[in-house]
Length: 204
Image 1 (cartoon, rainbow, N blue to C red):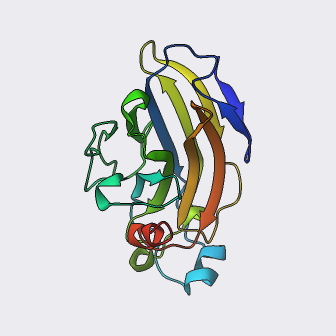
Image 2: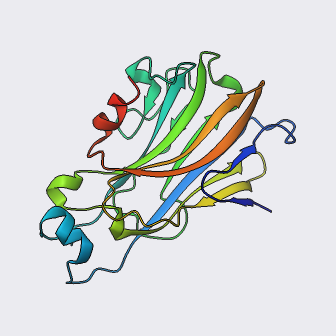
């Protein structure tokens, strides 16, 4: 049975899970039902239409011991689906968030992550959010979950239940090394970064 985490909680991932190496990180979200009202979104962006599909993109930043993205190949996203070392693989982009289950999935081979990489940061941002006048106030039921790929058992789930209206990027969670083991942290931090490149600047 999966362990449900709250924002800010940390939990051992490999310690106590002998042999755990290959995991699937699933990220999901749903668009809220569209309405004609503007509400907070209109006041934040100065009006405009929010009827376009919301294209949320999941990405992984592979950070070194200084918390830095040392090279561009360590950014895994829809334009670079596989890390150079092969330890992190993005299975592809979902353009709308419609449908049941995970919207995007990332496979991580923990045993293959290079020793210089100490943290994997999982981020979701809204593509073209400024032009489309969209923010995470239009998204509901966001979550991250970790599954043991060997038996497809869900180990951890974190439901992002905060109000993220006005935010255009979510730092969802982190997998990081600690005393030779891997741990997971439920972050759930919203920012107003308008693009993936803006996010990357914070880690370079």
